[in-house]
Structures are given as C-alpha cells and as structure tokens.
Image (cartoon, rainbow, N blue to C red; front, side):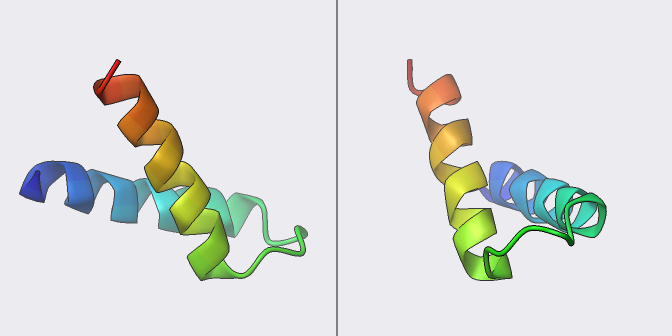
Length: 43
C-alpha cells in the first residue's frame, strides 16, 4: 500500500500541474484520483 500511496501522490501532483485550471482543491482532486485508483485495483 505504501508504494501505491506514493504513486498516487506523484500522479496527483503531476495531474494537478496540468489541470490547474479546474475549480477543485488539490485535496478534492487527490481524493477523486485515490478513489478512482482504488476502484481499479480492487476490482
């Protein structure tokens, strides 16, 4: 889980930089990514 968390954090920062135009906060954005990743891995 540790490496997954690290990957999500990295991915979040990467995507946040590219989507800085959106009106979500970084926490909300990371949460959406986290939930999305969890759905993929726990399928």
